[in-house]
Image 1 (tube, one colour):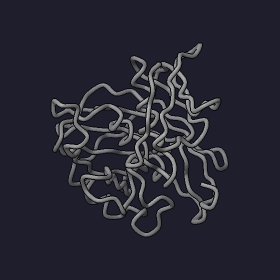
Image 2 (cartoon, rainbow, N blue to C red):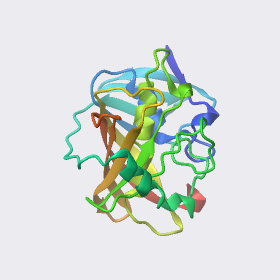
Image 3 (cartoon, rainbow, N blue to C red):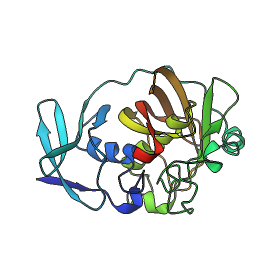
Amino acid sequence: MDTVLIERRFCGPPDSGNGGYTCGRLAAFLEGPVLARLQAPPPLNVEMAVRKAAAGVELVNGASVVAWARVSEVALQVPTAPTFEEAEAAARGYRGFQSHPFPTCFVCGPERAPGDGLRVFAGALGRDKAVAAPWIPDASLADGKGRVKPEFLWAALDCPGAFSFDHPGDAAAVLGEMAAQVTGSAQVGERCVVIGWELGREGRKHHTGTALFSESGERIGVARATWFEVTRASA
């Protein structure tokens, strides 16, 4: 039976796996665009089984289903990509620098050092009601041929969505589900750009879009996600 283990490096909240990374690991067992849903916080340093399900695959910890995934189309109207310099300027206004519910998050945590976390700091772009961040993948993310592994592309497509909408200061946004389509690859050291934008909201439930672009401006991947506001104490 196939298994997945989420190493502590790849946390979102301190004691559970980053949602986008976890979804990307599960998506690797399917082909094409994939919808993944988190049913429970993914535990760290625990070997979990991946089993076939009627519509796709499930990630299982003992008797509990942690997440499931199935093939699903991703339809989004994507805003125009900013330049790398525009993304750098936007990142300087990243609100996570002032207050962050998960400052050690693998993707967007400001307390993670270069070469450890992805350090994707998405700030307001000033147009299209979008946020943007620069991202230069480091060598630890490579597949042996200098290309970034797909699960890290999923991770980069995750957190910018959570910073595309406002929520109360005592709330944290946690990922519920994510549908992504990765159509290209990124190279280690490449100057990439990630953007995020809100698609809609239903009370404390938010729908967002994200997109990842290569240094040449090619769209590498897109994702649609659903987020839930929770109190920081319960996150």
